[in-house]
Length: 239
Image 1: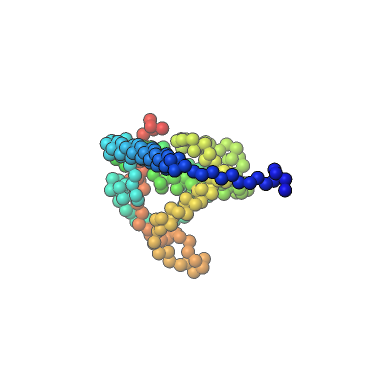
Image 2 (image 1 turned 90 degrees about the vertical axis):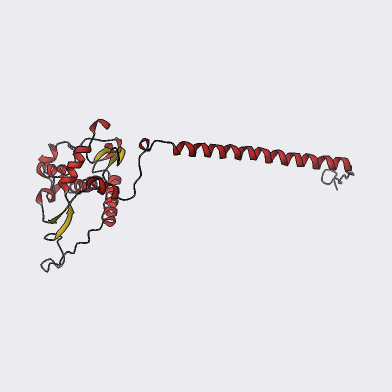
């Protein structure tokens, strides 16, 4: 067999002194690694303690307060409840026109629902109901854009700009033809309805073999009180 394919193993006796030296080096190496890891762990422990200490002494007003649910808002606003019978309102139900668009715009505060409040919202925030209404309005516009035969062409050519101001960069994408935006709106409205379900009983109407949703009395928040509160707490200088 060729020598380059097979080479006999060479064995040598290990000196006991060498073996002891290797054990000592191994032990020292382990101790060194342990000490380095311990120093790293100690550093992170001190860092975490420092962060926790700073967090405890941070001013409550310096960060956005987090609330769960709407109870703090209800307590602060103290809105009354009023009975209201739902009826078809053509100012909102008809295809887009100057009159219809003005009606939809009228349900939004001047700043579109954005506000700041020293207790409820130290940072710029939006009342969820106005975000939900904005989404419903976007769906309305997209529906009629998809069916131009329902919308007067002369009106479209002279359609006024949205009277609500642009609050942030997100509004640059708030076009009704943006299908990702519309998908977002569909799901937001769905979740909002499921979150606060209206449990009013709608009596069936034999004439339509179902229900129309109109002619039934509901217990509703006093909308004018909400609009008044929003007006008093809007701060356009913050935007």
